[in-house]
Image 1 (cartoon, rainbow over the protein chains, first blue to last red):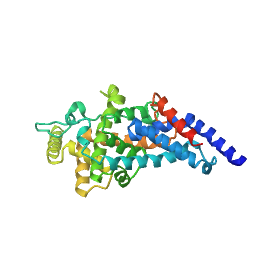
Image 2: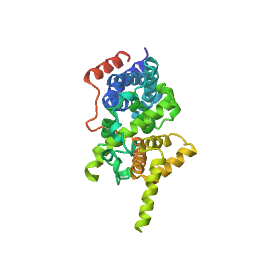
Image 3: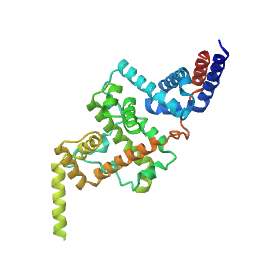
Image 4: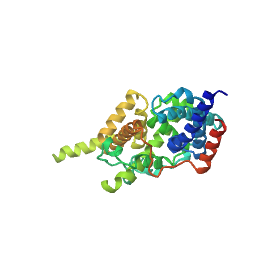
Length: 204
Length: 103
């Protein structure tokens, strides 16, 4: 091995140790927020670092290290979704989520209309009011937790990552109608949860 | 004036009974965020939101959530770093070993 090769190998080793310290937790949070599963997120972080090690020389300090690692991880997350949806094809998991039967009246003249205690209220808020909150992602994450994993993943892929419907359907191996139902259930649940956590004390 | 209010109220009630109920409308609200609705659905949605404050707020809230999430996602700062989950020490060690083995 030439001196240059040894030096390059040593640099890679030092860089890797530092990546893990500097970006390990960030990447883990990024992954778990989308995959909704601890083990899967750990695996994806590991795959990301190993892939980063291979392409280490191509990076050569262009742009931010974190952005580079996140770029690699996005592919690893997609790979994981494809693998998982092939192994466990979509079943009707919609019924497994938290029920929202009580949101709407089940009998009488106003069947199918809001039950007053669950009806939406005026938040009197702007996007900026929400964005400024320090607990923004934590509350979104907590509110997504009771949902079936695939439903929560569909929501984050759609709203956080801004993927198109067709891309999400391909990743999760679901029909577009399935996706729409999942997104609807996620939104119905999330909106109510955010209202309870952020707004109800001041508006009711 | 009272007569006018009465007529307005009667008209609202009539519309409520002839349009799809809130439960169906909230699903349409979500669909409207995914694709262009049929003319009929758009008409039902518009009319329902016009007479129903609750569904109107539902629509506003979802739009607000979408705008806030989109704006926040662009910000590259750590997502929910406060008391957010961290790599377990076992996973961290495993990754460290894997990386060392390959360098």
